[in-house]
Image (cartoon, rainbow, N blue to C red; front, side):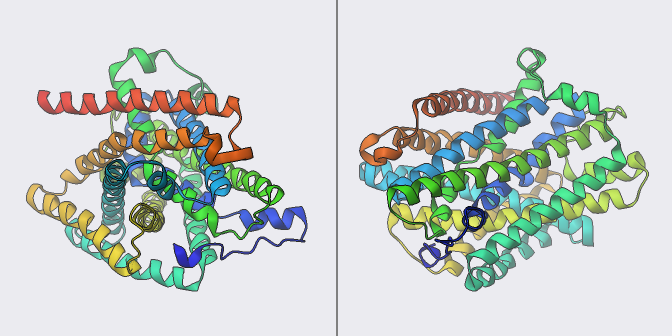
Length: 430
């Protein structure tokens, strides 16, 4: 990331709107992590099994993400440090190394979901066997490196284009599915059954765990510093304001996409009595007979491919930020990317070859549990540092924002501990 640091001008002296436009971009790299293949499995299962009820979980998790990403922008701009560097500065070396290892595990788990999602999309579109699709995903490194060599704005443009493709694909599918508008609005309201029904609670926790992802916190604190904002107090305040608006708008789009996946599952699968549909390939195969249009499954597969490719870019950037921040270690982006993707490809290909293609869906869920386990170790340092006046100075987050962030951190810890315990218990029961 060091080559991109403060590489994007913000048009000092230009109009307010022009300066704001210069800050648009990092939020979309962050947002794409909230619509990666790992999110698809939980939203498909929730919508197909319980209709629109779990839209509230999608809304709540997105609001939590908006608050945490606002803290990320504030921390990065106020201190000039990304979250990995801030942790290295603040904590003893054994703690810092432990946080680094956990962050690397989270990135590998994220990459695992992207490898599987991209491989499934390649199979659906081109008939490529999953094990070959998994291997093909190794070559995305060259696309990413070419984009980075052109400049950071090209990376942002690629990801924004992929988000647009995903959104348009789901708009097309929703038009075919014709969901109930009244039921959608009702689904965004809290329902007691989410807490009282064990299966609903489990899926709601899965949606939360898959949405608020640890690597995205490191990512945002790094990429927001690609902007060459003024470093006086007024310049930093403007940068914080614009970066927060950027991430909030982008996460609003992510909310729409995530809600669309659940709404599609509710309208196409739940309404027709298909029950739980967790497998991406099963969902794809059911769309033609249910929606009556051959284009629906193609749109689904194209959106999944765009999701996998764009999420891959952000995982790569997060990996660079984490390694450079915690270890001060700068290695070739090619080597860094191949190591991370190799650690994801080997288990994915091995398990698919050993246990068959039906194991891919289980691997997706497992990757989300790994992310859930690591999440508090990124959220808690972020919240603690945001309230530390010695680090933040005049940019310390206001009390109301810190109170909300503290409540979110507590809720995430409680919910993710329960998610992991449920996963362990179901494993023993199985």
